[in-house]
Length: 314
Image (cartoon, rainbow, N blue to C red; front, side, top):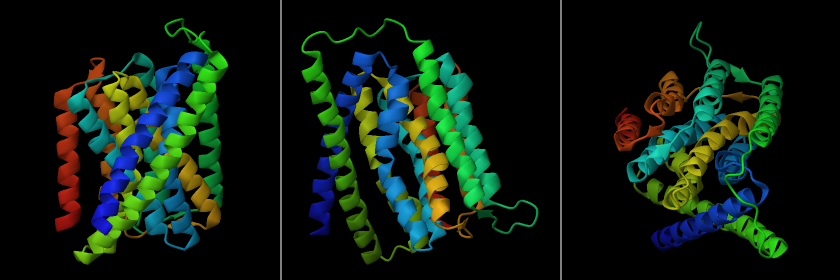
């Protein structure tokens, strides 16, 4: 039965992503919001809801490893797995704004998380406390405000406003966004629960489940949304989805989770944090020519396979 539910939930994830992307693009076109910002704000935050739920309840149950490990693992999978796979299928365009602000910010918040979560002087875990969490939340508010303010200032007439039945079209788009998100999150929840049941039946440890199955499972909405966007030749929305999700995961999810209880993680190692930072830097490394091509995507995907192999055999 678990295998059947797994397959059905995957179908739900695919259709949910299709509705979410289609509705988001319609809203972006109507209000002349850039594809990247709509991907980072609406699609990125929406597809990160499973990570928020998992990390929040992990903190509520006193399991900081789940809260932090879910974010670290998801951010690694988002870039190396999802962005790598998407770039192999559809080379991803990267503009100057991405290279000078969003991607460096993603690297910066990854470094901030590492400095908060690890004490490099004696190697013992440090605490992500409530004050740290408030700082993360304030950074998130500032990021969202600046993104929309800059996008509004730099808006061009590249996307015409809808004129045919605008009110009806807007309501249809909003229904697609809400319905797509609901279907994505529900399907993802079923997928993760049943994947864990199957993994435990195979004798897989809790640590590996946390960094792989839970992290990758909660990132399935990002995968589905990014591939769906890329299939529509909208690679900026796909990129915004990944970068926005990673920033959201660190600043908002851990910011909120640390308000439930201070987060101390002993089992997430410096190797995991280093891989997360390196993954955040890969789009900067491979995108300096204006796009992440198939070779760059293949390298990122290979790095994700090697990291997963390290987790299993290590």
